[in-house]
Length: 113
Length: 168
Image (cartoon, rainbow over all chains, first blue to last red; front, side):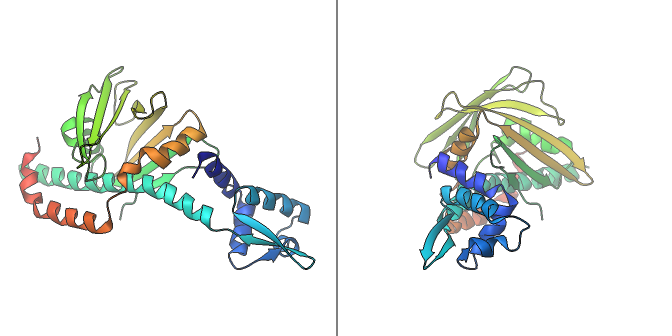
């Protein structure tokens, strides 16, 4: 993933309202009115959040009859998870090894006492 | 169980890595500053770490090389700022595959009961540099399949009794 796209995804995920919107969209497509319902926020404000999510590739918008529906696009989320998982694995494995080393060193110290 | 926590917030060029260890602070500090111990834990198991230079004092330089089974080398270097102590190990870090992109690592060790909490804050020049580093720089840590790792763990555990005699 290009880093600029990654920044857009992280920027989009940084806001709690936008995370709530994504959670709602995980259940299925929704209109702006439906998305606005749980929030004390105007529909234009919700539309603004949707635009940020759309630019990050996290949401796509379709028309059905007169309704404009938003849909969750899960792929960028998966890429973000993979992105951090690599770094996580590097340190998980290093730290597992450090745990073993510290245990071995302490066992030796006890032997000497 | 102790777990490695990594925080990389959007829009801020930082990565924070936190982990608790069941060991006293001075021992954890030694594991971070004694090259003989460092080579035994830093990095994934399928890479061999060579400490080519390690001078843990104010202005002292360090250079580490990770080598994989195919002989590929991944080198890193930097400089210590201030004399390293359990209160703070401050060092710059530059991956030689991406020259000019320097991050600043500050590691603090805090004793909490029987545990020592190690916290490293890495500061990058920009969010883009941080994201690129995470995406590519640490990629080498990943190609172990679960099976291969499990095999390796079995071997290490079987030979652990033999290895413990090598300390000090």
